[in-house]
Image: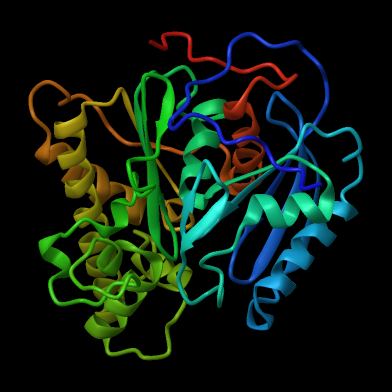
Length: 343
């Protein structure tokens, strides 16, 4: 018998009070290069973890088998409530099906994650987009805990995020809510996006986009690591030269585009908090300063005092957030952390 949860009502709210059972949650982050699995306490502590390479080139069955193997390796997984999965692509949250995905996971679109992994592991399985998982982690345990409304954005090899309203994460009518990387911005005009279109925020503000822009400006075709660009842009990077100026310009262009886009969303949605995470956001002042400056310059008077804050959970957000998906599906025998001022 397939061990999957029953479909829940679309955009169901958090469950009501539950027993304080210590049964753990299991979470998995599925990326194009690695699979990270973990045992997570109901309070959000990562108790154990396993990392395996993603056999992406071998197709979906091999990837599903690798996910199941990683979960089976986890110490302390016995008696877990279930398994939550975060993955790239658009995911039908109710059915646990990948609706679309990029080329990093060949043949991943159409994968019935809840059904396939439920069969392999004999556990209830729930799945969602990895950016939603990041947002859920920060909303439940991190920088947005206690907020009834918040905007989350993760900036890495791509750009995604989530929107919380009334204390719950919104998915949208077609499961694409929070795809902030595909906002059209003038700075990206003519630049190809990973989605196959052009002119989107991701094409100018993601890590690969900023690095590519540095190469254009500097003429240095050997730099393919954003950390090198960030190091050149630091105030103490040494004598100002073409590389330093190109690094600062590339970061300012990408971060400025992101800041203006986020300010537009704030003017429209009026959230309590804006949380920015991901690998690009972690590089520090050369990114945060132009981001914050551009953001502040575009705000309406009402939210004029709002500023983006860094995500709190770092790399563990992916696995912890995947596990937190189980807290949305209730009733389950784990306590749900409800926003203090949730409506």
